[in-house]
Image (cartoon, helix red, strand yellow):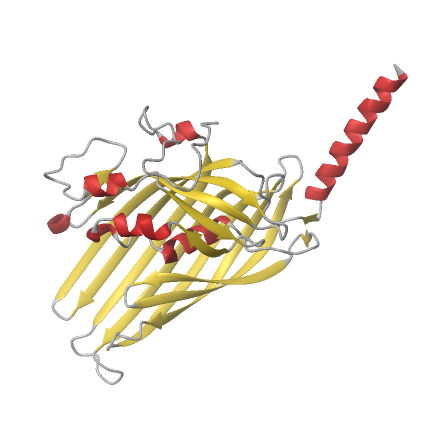
Length: 324
């Protein structure tokens, strides 16, 4: 009996120590944690509203996009980084512009007459790309990306690029690699880039740890960004930023060291003219992007029964993972 009680006390003490290392009432360890062979599924839903106006024309377009991915930890490195196998399992997208409507969902049978590029897009689903991740969750490089990216149909080439892969991974990691826990209301900064028509957006992001749920082992993080537009070198028009703002909120799993859910909204208004001194014939644009990413179970992705989230047609980077 005595040995049993000692063993029980030892187990309880170990659990208490583990929980204490994850979070206390006023601080939390926000570093990403990677465990070899762990599989996580995410669903991302994005709604983009675009308004473009010229002296002669006004156009508005809504784009709704949803995709599901699988992340598998293939290797963990001594510096806290890892190699993650990334596979996009499906894409669903529709546009709200009557003259160029596009409505596809790679989980459903395609009508090749109405969606001529569907079959090509469906063929690159579930193909693996290896992401080389640093200890703070940033993408250092890729293996196998060119195989998938080159297979994309021309009209869909913007859907998956190395830039979008970096951005998507950044949204799943709050960029925190502190050797010590972060205090409640503690702040830190990071920077990211987003591809944008005519150039790119530079996000200077300020994070704040706003809440800790010790029972659920989660943390609430808010993000506010200062946006700056950087035009591409080959763009020969003057671009001025009329308005730019971004905000977001993340729920972080302290035990697993990974994202549970994130919500973000980016709004930018640009004015483009022929040159810095001319606005005649120019165009004003407004873009609002709302994105929600959440960790889900495989069944929540509503994949076809024969997919099972693990089949990798033509895959070369890893073994078929389990469905658990």
